[in-house]
Image (cartoon, rainbow, N blue to C red; front, side, top):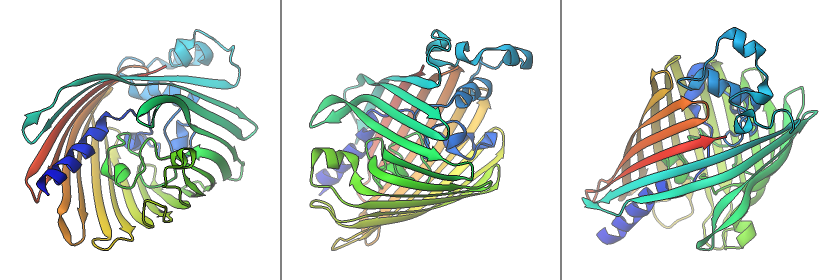
Amino acid sequence: MIKFRLAVLVFAVTLVAVPHRANAEPTFLSRQYPRCTTCHYSPTGGGLLTPYGRSLSREEISMLGRQSGAVVEAADPATAEEAFLGGVLGDRLGPLQLGLDMRPSHLALSVGGRDLPDRNFFMNADLLAAYQQGGWTFYGEIGRQPRNGDWAIDSYEHWVGYQSEGGLGVRAGRFLPAYGVRFADHTSFNRSVLELTQYDQVYGVEVSLTGERSLAQAVVGPGRADSLVDDDGRRAFSASGRFQFDLTPRIVVVGSALYRDASDLDPKSGAGGFSFGFAPGRRVTTWTQLDTLFQDRLASDRTHVLVHQTSIEAVRGLWIRISPQIRWTDDDPQAEVRRFVVGADVFPRTHWHVNLSYYRDRIQFFDLGAQTFLAQLHLYL
């Protein structure tokens, strides 16, 4: 049993090594941006930045990117530093927006006091594209994705959406379903335990209603996209819902629900969650999310996840992250796993991002632990 639990822990920690892409970072609630679509094309966050999001990454995030008001007014957005490939193409692309996401990484892992071999690897090199016209958005991402024990080039997110002036929106295609807080770290327990990681997109239809202080989203579809493509026995109808209310520009509450029907390999499951975001000022953001996952199993059919993250801007362009997390299951003390994460996000220049993260995981019942250090250079061009 101990060896089994240790193997489970190793698997959980080494998820950090799985390639992942740029995602929405809710840290910037402190800048009074409570909606993902302020900076991203996707209503659930992540992926390609809009031109406005690109300019904000220079003016609000990078250490050395901010410019004077007069310079900003006179600058041509098509040739600005934050434009695609630094603006070398000028306005030749017209309304088509492109992005290139690359992430070389280094991983060090220690399990039970034993150091495993370090890994240096290139996580991804992805091309992202969006075209908007008259309320319509056509969106696609293509890059490297694991497939049957190897790697393949695949379009892992693609959709078409329409947003009316009255706030009603609809989109169809392949995307991550709306649920909770989408932390950039896909191994965070509120993403990995609920299977909402970077390769858990669904094929479905999303309907949304956007108000001045609220956002409601509902998604239905035939299930996980890769399961439909690969016919891996996990195909099952899925549905999710998310409701966000902005109490103030820096205080947000979110309620979420998720349902997955039984498949050939997995039991029927559902989840419910509550999230609370609070930014007391421009340099501090806190998020807390509590989820309960229900599954049709003979024993311990309820799993709980509690994740908290505090982000502090120490100096302009340097954010410190602290995230205690816990996962536990009713009537099974052996399943309790505790994680503590401390990290730094450095934005030295527009679209240059250095991520340093230290993870400490522990299975309390067996007093077994693992430590992981991840260093990434994220280039978003």
